[in-house]
Image (cartoon, rainbow, N blue to C red):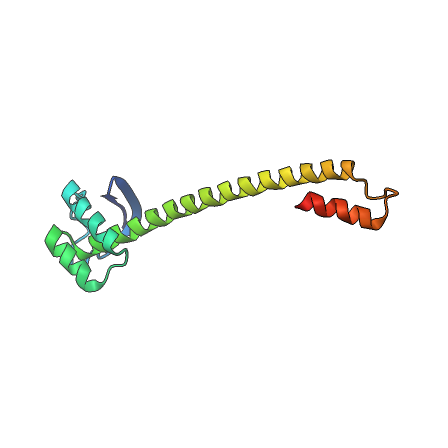
Length: 143
């Protein structure tokens, strides 16, 4: 028999298909038991713990579960979901940085191309000037 499982952590609700035979926790919580949302204190504690380290060792998972009155599996899933949200935010930040860098380089490139065209008009490459004069003009422009 298929059913739906719904969990909410930090205001994000997760629903997924499950079999009636699925074991949902490390401590034997049965499928028929109602899932409860985390309260604000639980979320704050989990967030603080996540800030200290986003990887969850088994001992730390058990300590958090006992302290918060949660199943160890709930703590593990909360950390997994939080890492996914953190990674998404990191990717967005990285994208924004790269986009700004690209725009700055693009602008600089356009400016250099315009300057290059201006210089080509001022100093025609195929002019009748001797080579040493062309080198002198080019070197003075580069300084």
